[in-house]
Length: 278
Image (cartoon, rainbow, N blue to C red; front, side, top):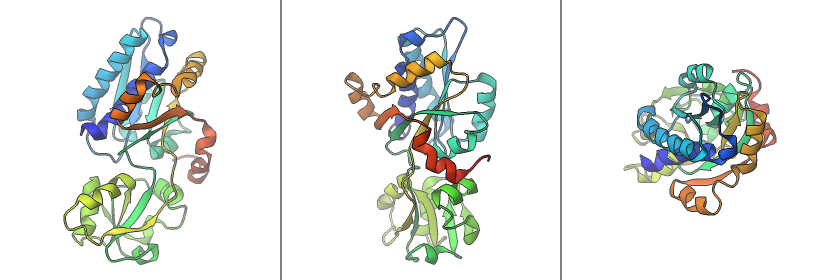
């Protein structure tokens, strides 16, 4: 659990630390950071205490009177919190970023590659089918089917729709794979983190990737319009320094591959594919 949740939770603290003491807020103000990682292992209840600890540490280091981090496993659960608290920054999985981008006027300021997080590339796996055509018209297990717009426009690039299959929705990442292993589904749509677990499952011999998507951008680091301009500017300037020097070891221990500044251009292709609105 630590290896799966640690990367996201450390990043929440790292984002806060990167702002530096110069960005300390006036008394009574709060620097909010929201983390949304959907389709992962673990729960909000398990993750939140770790995030609280990291954000409290960051607040002490930066001289903030108050800072709050909140971890969510779905965008629908996160939205009431965002509306009520007006956080300054977020770390969002790609699908959540695309769905929330227009409504919250999100600005991409960085990106983070986190090992074990998943969501960079998607695969169709099967023991029976040999390719995408062999999966069409057959049963398809997936825990990603709750977001058809993202899957069909961004992941599939319109090469298939979910209506091309008989869906077998699942709620847990490993259960998706097990449906194929057990013969309860001919194919499954999974991400690369799930694919990495395939070799560890008993009875998975012969189950393999028969189609994969293009590589997608990593989780987006975004600024909400509540973040002051000067604070945001300083934040971007410092973002790529978080994992340098003394922070390199700490980043490696929690699985951060990179933490760096980014812009809308880095997400332009997926934004275009997704289109406006939900």
